[in-house]
Image 1: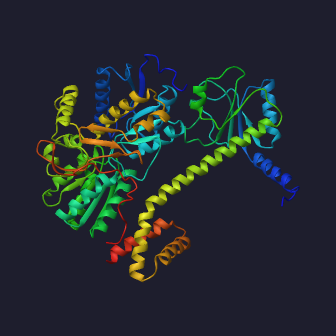
Image 2: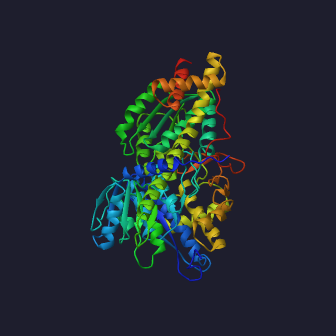
Image 3: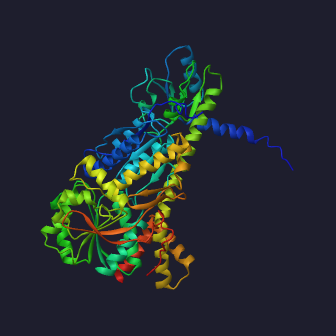
Length: 379
Length: 203
């Protein structure tokens, strides 16, 4: 019952929804590559219970409606129940009703703004309490209390800034500017913002700009002649991939908070980075989105090996509470909220386009997507 | 004590009949003998019934209930992705055996089996409509809860500011925010955010 193909040798089919084109394709392609690497590793080791893992990939072209349409296509035409994908929160919110109504399982390997819980999504990127909290504390202590927030104009930056603004104010700091640019923003769109920064002289520029616009922000900053040692750009979304796209000289000295950086000094990570570069080229770097996209497929495969059924109602209970030795360290799918208990790290971009990790949590930080453990009081 | 409620039943029935009569129904069925019967049964409800055949590649959005034959690629003819439906869907079952997996994909709100019997068509359409409306209400409630959860922290902070600056209790602070929201016809979250902003502005 429920899984008529369990005894056959037919492949396990899953869906991949990452963009190869459009404004967020730089980062989404790295997530796609990471998924492919994990699938190839699983198949090289004999598949799952002797059956090959087969992925069907569609390119939504960074378009929200295309994400919903392709999710529908995967679940209805291809008969897939498990989908790995989505980078922006808008695309996740477009796929969510589809997987909820048809009872699929979406694995979402990207940091996001929190305040969501779907029984049909496994969240493997950072929630705000796993990046924003430590980052804002560090910035307040090191650079000062005046924050200038710049983000791309969609759900994630606005919601993330709501949280960051609150954290800053709670600690006695102030938001001295909050500006949003279009997802297709060009360098000229950042020029007035840089002029404003020169005027109000914030302690730090806090960025949740995503996609190609990231390069333009950092370039505009460099052109304005600002000094990252005095007023850095601190970001939750700038990874090795974006630094690579803008060039290491432009990104050098700026700060990012993430569960994972390529520079993590461990055997598991070194081996992971080696395999990734061997497969996709020595010029490729790993990043937090790559790592999450990679480990989530391994967690899925282990759960599937135990259930031998890809039905969401069988698989999800097996996934909840599962632990894995990921490149970032030991991580666990939090059984209470379906998010992942991850490490918090702070990194500063260096001249080689990598991040030097200068702070990390002593153990994984429990996911708290609703920030229940972080009070909301007057400072 | 059990009271006889003789007067209640007709009133309740009238309400349901009125609910049916208010519906906009689109029906996709051939004008065969049993197709005609289906259309007649729908019209008997006094609902507004539009007939459409052959089934279009993309179904219309403007309807309360879509009653459709089990046509090929039905899931793709619906002008929405699953979970974002804009109308209740009643699937008219074919006489033969069914593909259960495709039925799952279509995400119908009710199924109408053949042969059609008097009264049953209306009951099933009403059931689909009621269930669909209930699902919409639940979705709206989740959206509202999400928004409230996000706004809760803003409201807590605004309350704390009022308690501190006006020397009032937490309950009074909340009532103040709520009254302002009602007077200005904006959300409580918006008032709370404005209080926080002005507090920061004035130092």
